[in-house]
Length: 173
Image 1 (cartoon, helix red, strand yellow):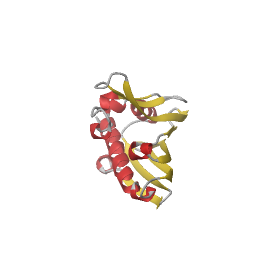
Image 2 (cartoon, helix red, strand yellow):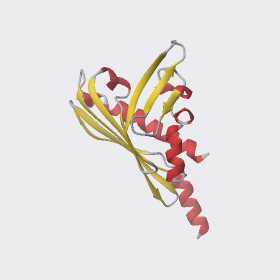
Image 3 (spheres, one colour):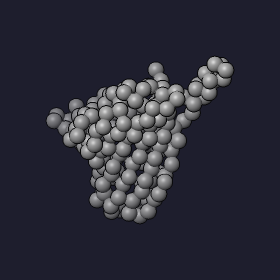
Image 4 (spheres, helix red, strand yellow):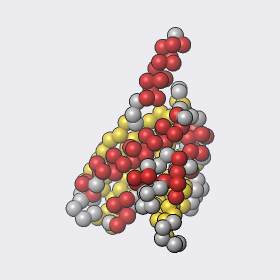
């Protein structure tokens, strides 16, 4: 029985995060990714703040995720310094809700949304489950985007699913 449970947990931890564009329209979209990570909710929560250890370098302005930071408190900054530009930086988002080990909500007009007349909400929900913590990552965007927000949905879905995979892989170490 232990072997079966161990095999099931190993298969679960090796499975990729489930990602999906749930809705997409010219004025907005919802994308959601979900994964079970090999960590407690407290460990997963702490790792969210250590973006430099799991966020993809490819999805930063500086090219180095070590320049990213996320302050896990209301009003906290999800920011990136740009060392090559003296005093330069990017505010990717601002924490709206911080409920340790359970819920983190950011006002976060990520990537291409930042240059459009759109808002974005990035939410991470953490829930203890057998084998670790279920992390549900949701991004809801709305407003005006040249060419239609629905065209951005698959791109944002892919990028955010990649970040969740990075979080999951980092917590598996």
